[in-house]
Amino acid sequence: MSKYVRFTFECTRPEITPFAGLAELNAYRRKLCELQLIGMDSNAIGFGNLSTREEATCNFYITGSATGGKSELTSADCVRVVAYDFERNWLRYEGSAIPSSESLTHAAVYESDRKAGAVIHCHDLKLWAALLDQIPTSSNSVKPGTREMAHEVMRLFRVTDVHRRRILVMAGHKGGIITFGRNFEDAFTVLVDARRESSTCVDSAFHQRTPARDERSVS
Image (tube, rainbow, N blue to C red; front, side, top):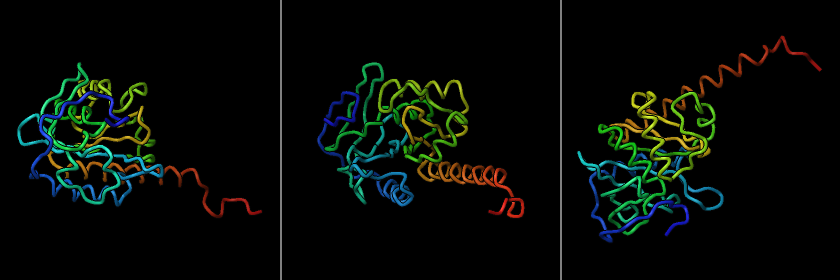
């Protein structure tokens, strides 16, 4: 049992066979690791996770807990989620790894958007600060990896335009951002575009606040 997993879980089969989306998952995970949006922090604690839906079902494959430091994942580093219950705070899966602590959050996205085929949960403190309360944002009182977060994600789908934006901020999870799309390319593009637009806005605001060189006093 991982101390970071806040739900109960039941393993029905100790292994899974390599799944069709594993190569694509690894390809985009490498991109995210290069951008330091997924990985392992200075305390050797992994952060960030990815998942992909299993065809037109409610099942999905998600990276396992404590895999942030690995450069490449195998099917043994992922689990196949086959059932979940938000009210019971419970999840059933197949595989030898421990399900990601954000498994119920991913499930809430798939539950809310039947067209979503991939979900990325990354950490980007600058983007998080820039987008906080500017786009669909979960309540600050809701902690990550909880059934309350799953309910909060579903609430955002009901009362905001997160379905169109395909990105949300986790206020109670510093740096936590979720993007999703039909596939990993879609979800990754949403994230890259948000980073680019956020950077442009920050740079523009900086230049507006900074006086021109000849307007500055010279000491």
